[in-house]
Image 1 (cartoon, rainbow, N blue to C red):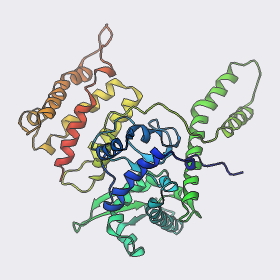
Image 2: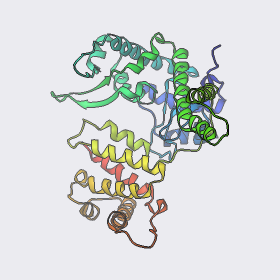
Image 3: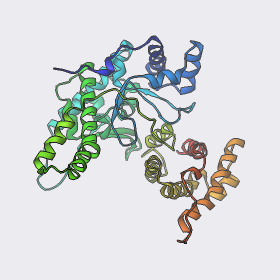
Image 4: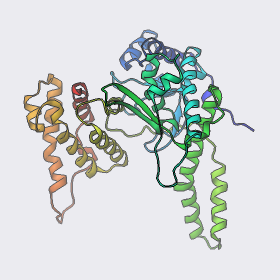
Length: 391
């Protein structure tokens, strides 16, 4: 028996108002509206935009490193005024005006699947296969430039398909383009075609499978094995594995109320910086990696790693601002009054980071903790300026 799809549950009128407000500008300009626009419009309707956004259905677990899928994607930690929360293909279940976008994207995913099925592997080497934007434009001449421009962003928040998203890059002739790396996981959507309901249901099933695997690996199997090891009853490995499998099978995908994941870097800024890869004179690959690792360690509560990574970030970015050192950038770049205060905090933080990195072992306990990290707004202010300067 097919399980009901939680993402198809009926929405309230305030939730529908939010989705409609977000969709209208996207349909006109191919870009999701900034959060300040959505908040102001919802205020005019007497509704709390953030409350409605966070009330939208989703499946899985939104914690860092886990799998989830919902009607919308947004920064769980901080909805900045200039961030751009976006809808997923699941929103088309509830918005007829968004269905044309979903159908276009599903036509592309169907093509990706066909191309993957036609891949001929080499017995001597691992080969990577891509679908280029130019190829898509030739295959689908009816897709306009506005839609083609947002394809990488739309795929970025679709489980399974997000894995192959390469984003924009500059070709040798100077033209900007994007490409998608084919991979065998997309074959799980073979036969879905452009049926939005089937597509979303398959995504829900995949998130449920990944979550069951995660819980079986880290909670169920471990818990069962620990319980068995402390029991007076003798079980062989096959019996233990069977018990774990039975427990795993009983876990079905559900809508979960989970703690908001801990993020240090504004997710909207992270996405903007990812989109800069291959499009700027300066290579931002390392900066993206540092920020990803900073968020990962922040979520896990690794204070020393966070201090070291934040120090690495502020030492890495001065050339973007036209200076050789962060001290020179703080003192000579033309900052706004507020940003200058943030930068001064980050400059003062370098002494604290030096403490973490260079203080030698001693008899007494160390006093540095996660609470000693500077306010995240300071780093996000720095990244905002840097992203705006990248060309």
